[in-house]
Length: 118
Image 1 (cartoon, rainbow, N blue to C red):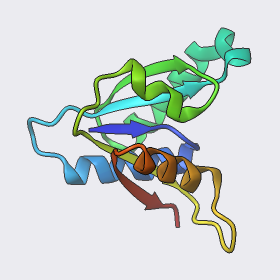
Image 2 (image 1 turned 30 degrees about the horizontal axis):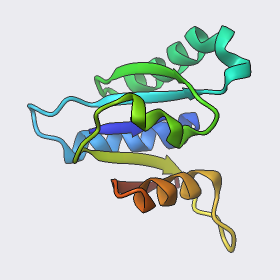
Image 3 (image 1 turned 180 degrees about the vertical axis):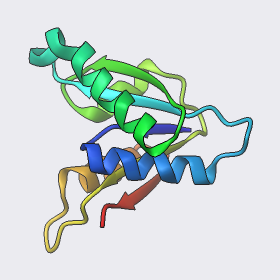
Image 4 (image 1 turned 120 degrees about the horizontal axis):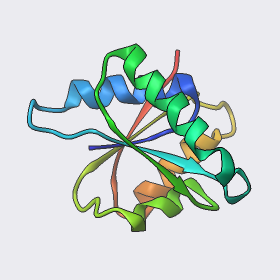
């Protein structure tokens, strides 16, 4: 099961949902997209989202992935039939970046769960 990090709140909700959907044998992997211009601070971003995971009590193996768009990180990992979980605010009337990410991943044939932040 993969969680694509978005915002701290969206990622927290996605981690909670991934944990709820998983079995005891399921490994949760958190992918943290890092834009190329921010590569020098990738360690800081990774620590930020690892802290989010600890705060919600979910163990996740976290990876910082330098990419232009968040959906560009999937070819780096063998996600296969794994579920991808994305959390974020639901936009009305226009979709948010997080919703667009979930839609793009789904359009590429991935099984995606979008979790709305309250």
